Image (cartoon, rainbow, N blue to C red; front, side):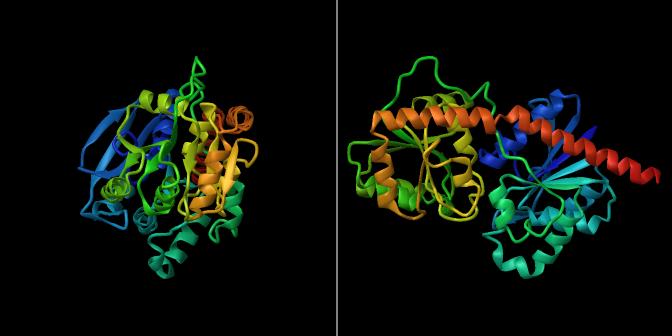
Length: 362
């Protein structure tokens, strides 16, 4: 089966949760014997990555992270594929596909509602609804997001398949040596709640925070660290193995996100699979569903720096931390094993392709 994945970026060219997910899923599908192409915005070149083909179409610019390209319509109209797998939000791809008129089955993984581009929703919203309704299946990454999204809650073709982690890569260390730092992993964007994390760290002159990521807010974060003399180190572009080691030695992971753009928090499953507890926020998304409070970590109100600092202090209790670390690992193994979840996505893609072939014969 020839599968076309459609998004704006993919790992390792861009490091992020969705980009990593598409990379790992595409690699899995290729090992299963499928021919996989990943269509992303870039410089108009193609190259092989981890057993699949990355096709980069040229784009004029990006408006609120959405790539703009006159070529996208023609590419989606003609590129060979048995089934397409769209990853949203990506308004330009939705519009191009609807205009293409192409009759090929497609599946959608709905990672997040539109947040930054909300001013376009009066125009884009009706188009998005038709697009989602026409999909063979719309995958929601958590039951919470399916039920709270105004675009997903009204659909009859949704299926919940969470995002998992590769448990052969993200795993507890061979030796239980814990470092002296708390870990943040993610792009430095507004919705990540970084300002509140920095506020919380004003309460910890002696405690180290490692922030892995970088991105649009990095210069401002560096200025704030210097201005307030915060005990924070920024780490850019660690290798995959280095990232695993950072998880393994951390006291805990913090995910202080404040907006609905944080729909799932894949870094939570990575940390949990390494056997470290998570501190996250009580958003009306999948974030607190992934990190079950009192089981795999602690959940605090979004935007509350004092509550965040208090949760960090609570994990100084060795009995509590040990309990949550064990719970995190058990939950990762039971609920977020990528191999099991990828197999479910593969089944949907195969079902979509068979349905499309049957309709053609009829």
